[in-house]
Image 1 (cartoon, rainbow, N blue to C red):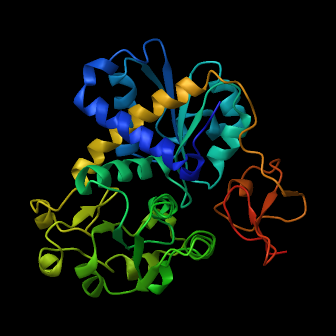
Image 2 (cartoon, rainbow, N blue to C red; image 1 turned 90 degrees about the horizontal axis):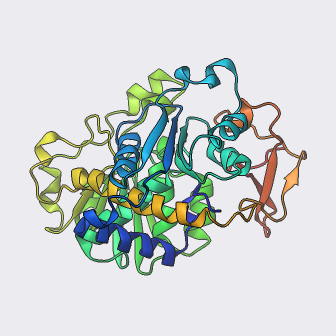
Length: 363
């Protein structure tokens, strides 16, 4: 049985296969209308979502299946203190596959380790990973650019807490000819573990800048993100940074004619509504692509669930009970009985990172 926690849980070949199936679903929807008849998807959303939750539900319904679940933590037993593992043990009695969003980083991994028969899909864990948004992005890029290689990709906005950004960098780093332009204020730079463990380790060219205007002429893809109020501990810092980048038609004058403008949505004001009519604006089609790629993913994971082999998420060289994760956004910060585990991320520098949130060991 296979779950999807990180986009790197899928090989390039598997991703290409999912894109192929999604394209076939788009062309031949009737062929898939009863593929999940008698199956149930549980949507466990511990924090608000519109596109991700509804696209998962639409995907399952269009495959002929059914959906159960909750859309906020307060309407579930987590409000009574139930652990993630206990919730998953219970859900295994009722559902065949699970889509889970949680504000704490690593929560879906806890679920994947606990599940007995229902594959777990990470629908976003804090500021960590969002692999199904990445699959959505890859399908969108593939359909609009005709390729996933030889692209200059600009990522703009909140690159520190933007889980969509972290997952997209990891995914695209496996294709040839990729260059990243990282556009953000100093305070919202891409996290160190993404720069060191992905970009620098794999020799992927990247350039960091605070200027969207200077970066835009060379871009094939411009991936805008909002400054996320819910990730800031300080309201003052959020207010200071929230209007850092606003894309408008004037800034697009110097952009390529075939630029693909993307956004995981929701937007606040980082893309002017005047851009919506520009043929280069792909973000609403991007949202539609999310339904089709999730249909393909559900089919794949349900098929692989027939293989009961476990465990998938056992790491080599893991230290247990040696270090304590200090990241307040990590799932270990609220689940006291969860054992702190650290994997060896860089043998040369002897750097260990939390298995759940990737924070470095500090003690």
